[in-house]
Length: 405
Image (cartoon, rainbow, N blue to C red; front, side, top):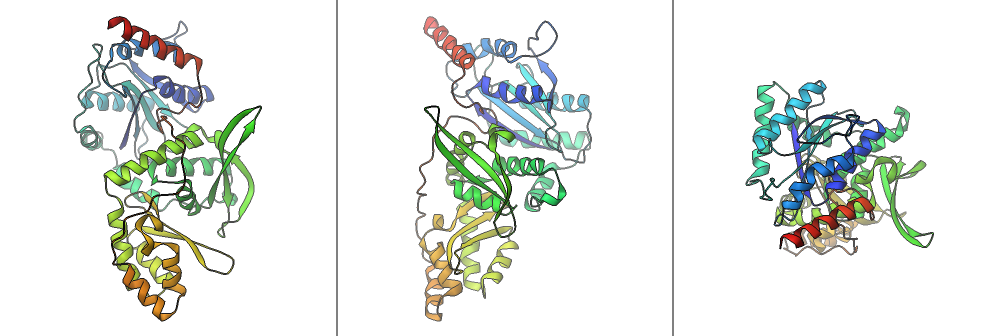
């Protein structure tokens, strides 16, 4: 079982994301704790927010008090709703959130049914729940639950599934579902620092993405469309608006993911492993095909972009082990498109120069794209634009804090 923990500041966004799926019939409520229901026994965003409001109103120090967790059992573990609910409750209890208000949802919009949990990171007095070493603790808990309930290890399966994901194939039918499953998995799992890097990742699975910017009714808009391609990268069929698949694969959420990826790659130093392997195989390879085969053995795929004459003008590396997508220029000039054009298509003298240059340590260059800043979180903060109910709720909290002071 794989657990993904996301934190944010918008409770309305987290609840709205799940409630929308409930309304669409692709999700259901499995359980709750300390939550109010409507008179007819159903859950509404308004009633849920009322349940969380005392905790959020008491908070005065925690910057991101909202927590949105997804629990993903192995696809072959066929658990009924009651078992999934108990699994979620036990996970929360062991993580230290058993007494917190929370909502448990089961998502059924993809073949791999999974759980989403929305809760708060502060108690009724506004004190933050202890989250020291939380991700390590979460991993220990999922392993413990796997052993207790004799579940398969979804973590190892996830690594395998991601590397061997199938390309979108129109002949298999239900293209929309194929596209949805692929882009949701890739956009939430891999770290990329620009739309071009995301596009390179999608190209491995016969997909592409394009930006739409303009003005409609006097208001600016910014959106994305996804396209199916053939093995040559040529678009086939009609494009799909990102809104058809949910806001988590839309422009705002994607830009936020890009910004978070930049920080993650830098903080975890995720370039080092990939660069070391690229450097080694550039010196040892005989030709481009040999280079690609050598990288594949290390779970790294490379996407070369070429013009009509066959000249390389772009190169991107996808490290499936570290879930990173990195343009060659991010490693420095010695790993840029020109360097590989020299290496594979240059003269003997140029080949020698290119091989020597790979040993030079050069600081990575920054990307030229200026990305939109967003405070949305990929999972828990997926509302776009202003929302009257959310703004009113936020203003009430601010007024209450001022009164306490």
